[in-house]
Image (tube, rainbow, N blue to C red; front, side, top):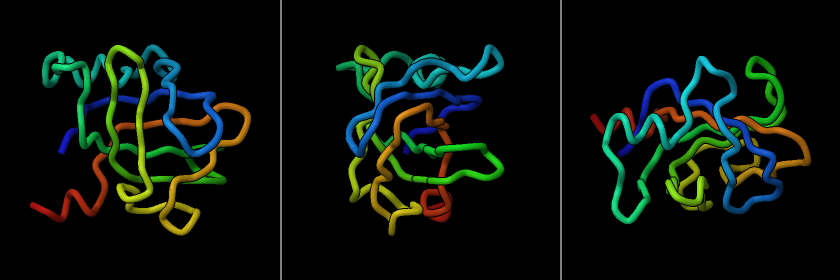
Length: 118
C-alpha cells in the first residue's frame, strides 16, 4: 500500500488508459513523484506500485465522474497506470471512468478497502 500526503495533480488525458500526470493543481500541493519520493525515496526501476488514488471530473464538491483505486506511478514517464481489477469504486459500476476532453483531477488518497485492512 502506497500513499503520500498533500498530492493533487491534474490530467488532460482522455479515455480509460494510462494517465499522464500534468503537475500539481497549485503551489499548495505536491505531485505524485515529489510526494512519493519525499516519503519513500526514488524507486527502482522508477515505479511505485499499489499507489492509492482518487480521480474526479468536475468540482470536488459536485463531481460528474469519480474513480477510486490503486495503480502504478512511473516516476520517469510521469504517468499513473490503472486497471479495472484495481478499481474499488467508480461512477461506472466500479470500472475505470472514461476521462472526457478537458481537465480531470487526480489525488493520492487511501480508500476504505485499504484502510479496513488494518
